[in-house]
Length: 390
Image: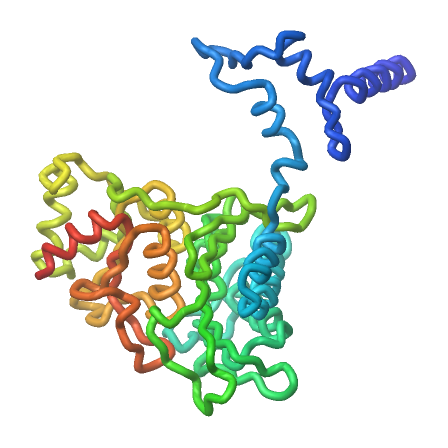
């Protein structure tokens, strides 16, 4: 019986090998004939009324060669060839993607390797209890950035003060980052992420440079969810790369991302509504009832991880906000390593980011862990909510 089954399996493999596409040579003759016959007519999907894709387009979806046309390493190499001054950024993003791969692996295995729960180290400088993965992610990100040889200072949510890089590895750049945003969601296996911003011109600085978001030379986030997606900008648009775990490479999957000028979703912790100013409450009453500028009812979606909520907002449009209130009079989110990087991404994608009366990236920081209110997302949605705050 077993011999018969094995023989049948071998026969199937031989047929598949003869007809299906191969990864290396991508011989599609058999697959093309199965999809469209000799005529090569467009593929009619089950349930569809008219053919919408040619056979070559469908085969391209399954071609690993096509899907891996551009990796993050390739992308940054091209950026350096166009502008040799970006060579350090190529090294920095090499370190960032190495850190994100490692963190993605830790997040995916957290439940089976005893990496969930509190670390038992007490509160960090934010007054928040540290999770095990907070500390591990912070160590990984610091290590990979330090090894690039490009960093002068590192500023992390998990560190009380900024870290100065000394010796032969000291470079000219500053990195600020939240190594694991939304870590309170880890135990529930909900999306978390890393947020980072990059600044230049720090090599000869005696103290950690406190610069505006407009002075960032690059920014991005990595979301660890059903897949691992790294969204980046170097000041020339936004591009997204998805981790192909079979190769260990981030592959370009979201080229030249543009945020819609309007959305129909707002994202916030509405449990704080009683502490919000009356003008802001009026905004939510209007848009949720379809009485806003568009006349369309808005719905609420809130994950509780800025990376997850902003990723949806970046792709679908809408509004993410964390306003100041009677409890958090200066806002809740940190300017340098949460608000500014996300603001740069939003603006590079055609959106906006405001603290209520001015752009986020114009706000001059006075300390590493400074907090600000934020209203970020589709340009028209940000304009509308800010009009209520005047």
